[in-house]
Image (tube, rainbow, N blue to C red; front, side, top):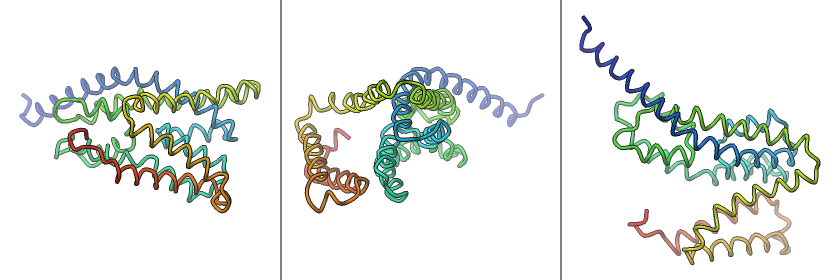
Length: 248
């Protein structure tokens, strides 16, 4: 006869297995979207001179399109390691908030190792499906989704770098535009219904251009320019136009 402790262990094992399988199913649509975006990033990585191994490691250790693109931009501009690390930290700062939110979804009895495992694989899309789950988040659900989604991201990057090596340079340059199209697709829809956001985006474009041509400022490395403009514009927008409490 099984003891109560054994029955609880069996029950938890079954729940973890079910959650893991459900996470894998929910991760499939995310994986397909990741593949297309990371392929464009792979093309950009090849244009920046990164190898297949370097591109793979970059995607495995930094599963964030904006963060990776920021890193690629800093590499192209010959920024220092400190500038690259700082810019990546700034661009990926939203994950601090996502981590705090997910920590509230976990049971207080969740093992610390599970918390570390989840924190490594936080992305916008994985956060969205995890945060929408009712009740406490079972870590194995997140593991299942991440196990499917993140390899898709890495595979797309590798194939993008390989394609960038094999295809003619003129075609690689054309495909690199897809990455800018991705960011336009992220920016334009929210701007349509938000007049303030439109102004901030236009202001960002104008200030970025001025920083590249004005005497004195233009002599600063482009990496430092990007960091300063990102922090300054974001801080000003947050101070001047804070998001209403009911919309947070």
